[in-house]
Image (tube, rainbow, N blue to C red; front, side, top):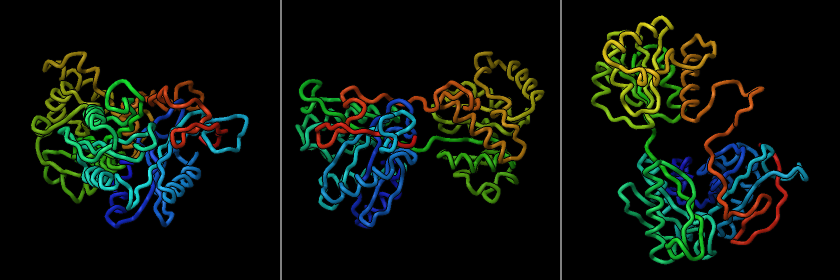
Length: 399
């Protein structure tokens, strides 16, 4: 849901009623991760996606129904060879969808409004909802902030809110969206319920060093991928807003000095496009010691070998050098700045998601990686959880 927070925040501000469908859990090969959302308002306008097109029509209908009856439902879509024309995922995966109405009379509307506003502002926040549990608790929400404070209520035992807030805070600290199972009274025993926690954290950083035409193309694709993009160069004539209109920030400074003074984390990617030893060596000497997600440097293979020799000479270890992606990017045969930006972005995505970078055609590697398993307490493949009860469903379709 928080992946479409900007538009939902506008709907809330305009007083519109809507229903939001959120991916709770997936199993096997499924196109979207937990937290992906699709919302439908009273006018029938739909935004977002939960399956890349596989079950959107059916989920749209569930949202319209939830708007009418005000009921929160949890529905599962899987795969069935016996009924190839039913709605579902032909890719063979399983996807659980939580559909929640957000109407003027919804008890959690104000909590949703606060959560969407926080996400739209880029603040760190998590929203917790009961995906599976007692009927009287479904549809409630809890907003948890980075400092551990929370607003709203799940509507059960007071200890339930405290326990849920603790679970949500831990997932927010990790920047993770997923489910947790806790007891109805907030303990680890008693009747279990499944909590869906969606985390919204500030965009990860992409810092591009070197204000060249390749950097301009990389800044554009970095924004497309959801990064907060900074372009840094020591030359003020090149580091200008006119040349980099898509960048969030332009810094005129020696690259290594800027990197020393700025904040990076385990999601930050550093792209060194200066390919000039007087910039590259002091910058990479520092960058390769930092706990960032990716360090890549542009240059020919000859440049790469010369740069590595210079880095060894200043004390960079072989273990640190092994972190360097150079020459930067995947082998796509790229030549233009735009093609090169795609090559670099592809390597960043592959590095983050554990991809091999090889063509999927003829490969025997998973298409979708790092997807949490469907919780064991959710009913088996081919069933639908609706209002706390299960019914059999033949499910298939496109995946």
